[in-house]
Image 1 (tube, rainbow, N blue to C red):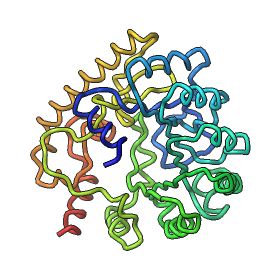
Image 2 (cartoon, rainbow, N blue to C red; image 1 turned 180 degrees about the vertical axis):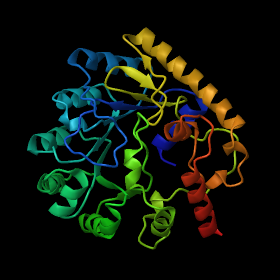
Image 3 (cartoon, one colour; image 1 turned 90 degrees about the horizontal axis):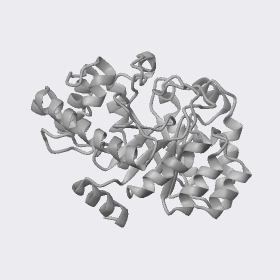
Length: 333
């Protein structure tokens, strides 16, 4: 176990802050049909940047993930990133890579990110355009070339959807050719406002399981079998939170209501406490719901946040997840 993993586990057990997922903007320069975020155009304002960073530092957060939307679309991205690095945070950046240029690479050379995760939506210009609705493949490739030439480490990740399944093997080849890690995400969610439109991109269970248990699939991406438990397995509300672009704390990436506004270190602390209390409510919903007594819960990814996003209830079974869990358990036997 690495030092960072030990810190993650220690803070989780102690209920101390560790990870903040900061959505600096909801804007994105791509238009992917699977995206579960609502692109409202919100951006953290210049006057709020110092507030958020002061609050994270005062409460002992160590790791900050900058995301969006597309974080590099924020005009203050270099300033926000430099400030986080100068204040001692470990910074992970989640980006589609198409806005990375020579200036960005120079910034990363001077202030290396803890982790740089780049989404990949095709290995040809046509694949990329069909997936994202934008002609930006050349900018994506240019970014990878610039990063490689500068010796900056990065990894790739890709959502497995109806549009990407046919070129997934090509993406695997791309990752091997560039000698970078690749993580495949096999779940598609409704939008945060519960609009089910992205589910049109969700693959049938048989396709997901066939791919996950194929020889080519990266074993580090596969969900391991878990011990049955009546408790929530995630760290949300315990040592991790989401900070949105409007200065609210949310329980997790999938559950955005209720959310808790903050305007100073004191109200940030109150918002953290409220998120922790929300977790207690969700724990009880999980214990009282069908998941805690389900025989296939060790293979299932359902939770109160997923339940709310899909059904509007905190403790409903999601048939797709149930079928996926049953299929995975059959493969493991």
